[in-house]
Length: 427
Image (tube, rainbow, N blue to C red):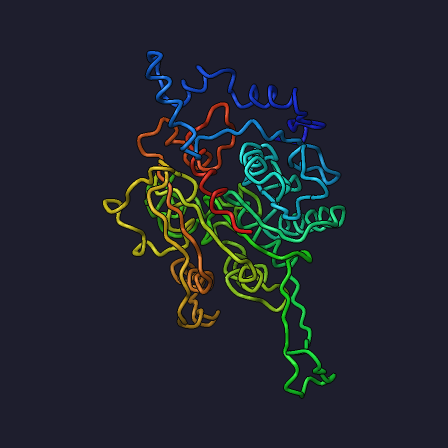
């Protein structure tokens, strides 16, 4: 997963690009495409009938009419945008996509291409390369600083940008949360309320109104989206399903967190560099970094979570819920347009909650108390929650990567989840 494995200099032109992209995505012809979708050989009449309704399912649509060009950026990542833009129009919405632990720039390749094909004149996708392979062991804070510097460089060389969104998978979601706190800017300005009125310097006149501008890297923050991200860490009970809910195994895992470097210590809340674990500090604004204010500045926040078969990240931690708040499985129903999505919880206004427990109230860094503190801090903001299930799928045991569609050639089960994200993207 090192840099040598990346597709340096990869470009998709109008003629060669479509063919090459189809080859990379395993789409050689109509028959192979149908084979991936589970459609066996049928008679001619049946085929025509299937073809007539197939385009209606946008989650399975591959629009080859929008050529995509992918170019390596100076920072090492990749820009993905439409090769044919509207006259005098350049995409002004930057979408930053960040991989998870031991991941690489290729992990978001499929999703990036689908994004650009859906909104060719509106967005440019940047797949981050600052944290890949063993660099993902360096810790959430170090990775977040790298990502922030990378984003600043991208914004600097792309002056026409006006908006920004983040999409992170697994550990990448935590890295995004740290990076946006580094990139957060809040500016206040006094403006006049009406024509012919003046605003005094001290703002004492009624003609004055204070306007607060909240930016991320100088851009308007719009979407903050995470996929299978351990927002509450992996230390709590059943937060890492691979340990089968056995307390003894969970304790051993927490004690062995150093095997994943500083990132492992952050995930299992074993770090105490500044008196308390980093993830706990990230659940509120600190003196130096406004973690919650930065998250709040986004127009929309969404968390995609696997309900089962994700052995690395539990349902509770990735959906920002207490285990008692998880939907009952018997009440979940698949959505026709998105067959692997079984529950959608729309964002609602957040009522006032009890004050987030302070350090004095967290006795000895007990995992349950720290988890509760993180939930209270993060759910002061509204979140859309999308629950995903790969039950019955041949890819179910790879749910952690299937939800992201890391490689189209071997994994096509999660394309409806990616399409749901694209269909509900805010501008």
